[in-house]
Length: 214
Image 1 (cartoon, one colour):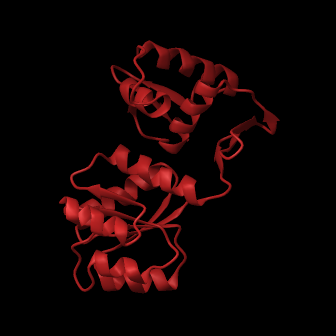
Image 2 (cartoon, rainbow, N blue to C red):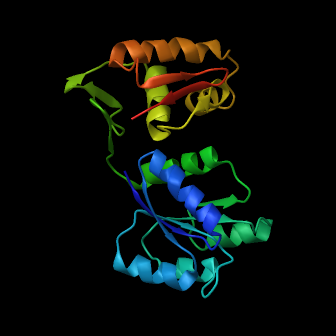
């Protein structure tokens, strides 16, 4: 879906981010210092840069000035307000402070990508989703989904192969202020399975929630 450059000197964190991005369909490339990151950036095209601040060779605050026209999300332990304001004033799309939840990082990455991509088609098996038009087809035939069914499907697709609790699905698809019961998720999952033939792909995770495989 997107090619993402990860510039992070902690190899464990860098690899963890790359593997989780891959699970949801993104292609991550890891660099471990500012100079290496800059060289890689100049050689290849990237849709997004995930950038640490405290890097060897070139700091993130200096590096962002050299990666023009490419969106940047800072992912850093520097969590003071002045650091956040500095990062955002330099042009970052977002500023995430460590430690962070991987699902939150993926959600913020997808928000930025949706903002910068005029059109986006996502595919899972026989299903194609036109995100801009909120149009869903199965084997080329349009499938009409209710608004909330579509929202839930998009959350599943953007977090494919990741187990999501019912509470997380409520937050992501219905909104943080939704006061309904988690039973609502089960009802909408059953509808998606039936309408889109996803009985095997949407797995039930015992005592947790669901996972879309594909």
